[in-house]
Amino acid sequence: MRLPAALLLLLAAPLLAPPAAAQQGPAAAGPTLAAIRARGALSCGISTGDPAWSQPDSRGEWQGMDADICRAVAAAVLGDAKKLVWQHLTGQNRFPALATGQVEVLTRTTTWTFMRDSSLGINFTAPYFFDGQGFLVRSSAGISSAKQLDGATICFTSASTHELNLQDWSRSQRIRFTPVIFADKDEARRAYESNRCDSYTGDASQLAAVRAAFPNPAEHILLPDRISKEPYAPSVRQGDDQWFDIVRYLVYGLVEAEELGITQANAEQMLAESPSPAVQRLLGKTGGLGPTLGLERAWILNAIKAVGNYGEIYDRHLGANSPVKLARGLNSLWSQGGLMVSPPMR
Image (cartoon, rainbow, N blue to C red; front, side):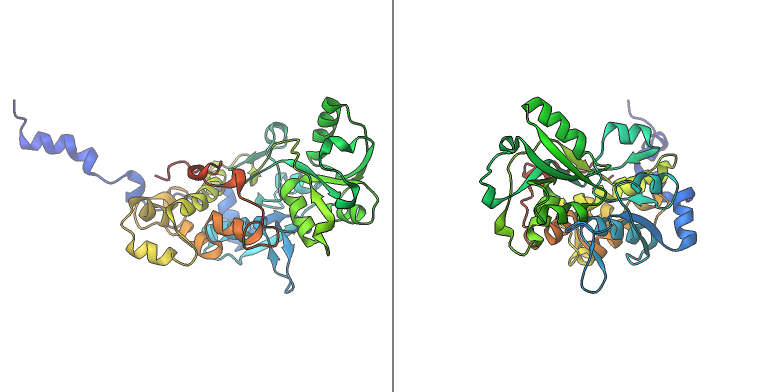
């Protein structure tokens, strides 16, 4: 039986109509987004100085992977990557600074753990780096495995995951060690340099960056052992789902941009010329990704223009274009055997 034309049109109407988000203006700003706009700047928590992650260059400009995540968020929500208030935090005061509102986002090489996520009044958003705890030793020591550190003096920072990881590992391996604990990573590094400890333990990427900054990197070895898993993720205060989604999908958007071949240099051209529906949605030409979160359509485009895609950020501070030259490994795209993957951006 043939249905009347009017009935066919009625049944097809939901399929032909654009999504509701595409028909409406931006969602109302939640409390965090409204506060950032009122101030005209994003308050972002980084370290007091950490090679490859957040450290001032010769001009006093903060550089590093964590710093660029801050810039990307500022560009996405305010349209300007320079509208930032840098908050230089230690391991001890980083979580109180976030919980009390001193910062809106914390990107300070912070590992996502169950207890931190469930008991500190904060939420972790999306992993932007996968690491593991390792050990730095002097080449002259003749050590090739962490199992040879029995009886060693080991430096590390307090208020980090390193102490518990080290205790768990040493207990399981029946290895004794003498801890030398510091409040700041720079203090721990200087202590290791001045031979106050046999080894410096921390997240392997940070140790690789420290080693690369030494006057004679060849005098030090990053051992191959990894005794933990350390997923880094920006964190935000609990209680504002809109802000949580903004930061989370900003990270995913940078990953998606790399997968789609969108770079800092070609983003505008891709916006104008790419026939890919996924590219058009991500850059805001179609769809309602930004407005759904209370942002402009070009939020991801602005972030990419400010700092590049995920791969560009990685290569600039940790990878091939950096002194560290750390292989991507787990931080490769999922399509290249790594763990970096974005949910469908649609």
